[in-house]
Image (cartoon, rainbow, N blue to C red; front, side, top):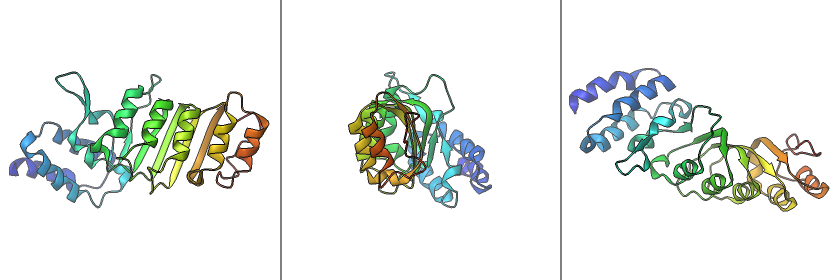
Length: 223
């Protein structure tokens, strides 16, 4: 183990970058399991000076077990920013649920899924997550339905959240009321909702919300 750590150390000592972080994770990929917990602790200590933005990963955190089930790798605890390569195929709902429930992702501070097809079930899983409490930035889109929007608006899972982006479909005035009355909406920096039947009352609720920033609140059918 000492020799392997010596080979890893130059990567830990270089200036922070996403590329260097990916190389570090690649070295951990084939690390003997009995030693992995100790080396993860060593790497974590060395990366304390790194900004969260640089500790970014995505697809490489996933592996398929002998039973065919997809799992999150143990070293995902080192990751602070999670995002995937843009894909027109989007994310399957099961993947979003996996992300929301994986204890290995408990140290995430940035979750970026703005271009993925995060649907209602995914948004609801994230909103009820017990492992994403350290999130400071959350970007979700773009097929979240009324149920998913309400789940996020009512969520208490993100006490440290500083930035929120939401994209989805809104078709119910009650959803507009829930969003309008959610203190979490004060964190909004982007709100992109496609209208699917919202009435004038719904627009009024969003426009007059004490929490949604005025420059984001839709006031017409061009939500």
